[in-house]
Length: 310
Image (cartoon, rainbow, N blue to C red; front, side):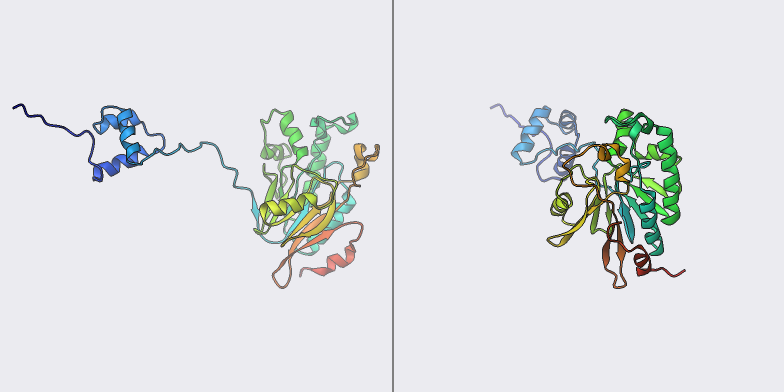
């Protein structure tokens, strides 16, 4: 009588060798044919069938792409300005805002997008006399130096006017490159994010959307992100409660009468409103918003409110 023997391929399930095989098989990017050969299986298909019957599936390969989850975080008191659009800024208004922040001892500032106008690189029509990059760069450098003298540290977030420059140069530069073109004035840094976080409770944003309804965009962002939101870009001004949060339209630091598209042609959009925001901890440790405007702010009184000791 002829005897026959059956040889089992591969390691026994539950054995240490099997456990090692499972670890190797489920490792992203593992070569199944190579594993089959190394562990005594007839083919990669054979190994895959055995693993499927055992309820073991290969892991999905990890994405090699960057996750955009490292937006800047700032802690402490902070001055927030938006839409300076230098060289169309309002020097008098910005000067008053900087004086208040300086008198309160605020050491950090955020420009919430569109620090520069980027006129020379804009796809929209502008007067030829305004489209002078060297002039804009020189004035911006000087303004940033003055801003640093009043408030030592500044973060410039991305805005749609900044993107004019980046897109005109085929996206071969970023915010850091723009600051290098400006000789990166002292105390100034930038980010390619259109937002940053302050004290983990405020989101300072230059959003994609705009609205003719004051408070609408920042309130929708409050609902989306579950935190207080202060937004630029809309050129509106106001502070509005939304559930447990505050929605703020920061206002602009440019001069509306220096913008030809605004001053020389009527539109049904609301009038542009100047404003700035200071997030300041009170004596009780609570971070509170202070919205400044040339329409209602008593500048002398504001400067005395948190007068710092010299």
